[in-house]
Image (tube, rainbow over all chains, first blue to last red; front, side):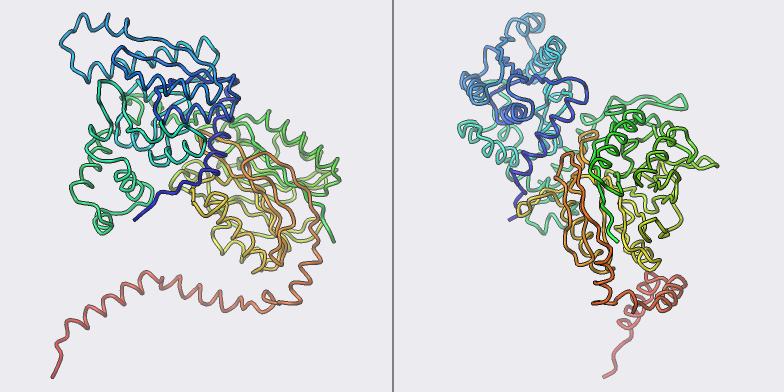
Length: 273
Length: 304
């Protein structure tokens, strides 16, 4: 059975150097991060604390009234363990004020709205605190499009974007994230009892193996079938990747000039830095 | 002859010539203080690597005023710079430039411009069209840039052209995490190349890589000097800034070539003849022909 590489010593070294480099070259030294109590944001916080020093990291807990109390307890555990600065902002009033006008809104609309409200709080505090927003989206959810565009997917610098979920688990454990957090079932906690794997319809361990062979190792469909994956699973995942490509790109711009942003006006983000 | 050689493993600012010139000067002074006789900088380290559309803005002709200072400093310390060179007809090259005694003595224009995966060099740069060793005050050496060395023809030519040492400025990104390896997979491959080529061609490999991140892509550092016996003479830190100085004792080349005179025995005519034959009838065409004949054989009915 294929195993994803999890060289945690090397990953830790690379990712802390990455955070330090990419943050400091902007002239800043601090980051803010939304702490959900899940493994991704816990790992991002631990990496940031190791890279920049805990006093330069602000973890913001943003519970809604239906959020599980366990999530907040886990987020507080990370704050304690990493010694970072923290802040709790209950988003219930601003969410409820909005949905009073749209009482029939379904769970998806409510979930996306919460993710985007949290984003605005993070960006507001990043400006207030002279900091960058540190991302928490991993490669699995980025490839599957399992995240809210301009919500939890928004950040300035993301240390986890090239790590599959199973690699996040391994690195989180190696960096001392509590096993209660690493071993619990991942959840966006947007409604009571929600779990990622129930919602997606497959386990992270299975999909990570498939994605690793398909994306990183460039296996063809025939080779994936020979490796033991069912045709329906392969096709479902391929479709998800294709259909969520828009979430991984800037908005489409209509070309009318000689030089168009992102088409033939091409500069690195770190231009001049 | 022994050359006290320094490598400046730096993290340049992307697209900021002035800042990087200042960094060069600082490193040159550090090398002089360390009594180095030669200093090698990484590929495109005067400009940064993922330049994209800034290529024409940071390009320099070999007469540019920006290079005057480096020329002047090379009176005290010969050096290799990595920069964007603009030719008189306005092509841009990814070049390594050798400065000695106040002059530019040699320019190597990168021949193999990677344009796949994360690389996009051929979109922005023109391709160099020669591989030449040249005579420095220390002896005959060659400049090859990063990907050039992934094509064994370049080092083969450099060695046959008399190079006793290959100076290789590089901007090699880290990629590929493997469980059994301490470093990333690109670092592993490069270290194998440096060691194999140093031993195979009985020469010194002087490999100057950069560090730092550009748009999330890290450069793995790990600059090194490997002698003709495949022994590492000096090694810089992985993934971080560093500055190393070591003796490149060219007598070792003589010793190694006396013990294993592989280059003496190299049959250049055979290589040229075979290359000319292959150019006329490339292997791909021969494979097709082979496949065709196999199919034809299958179709022929067997006689009992």
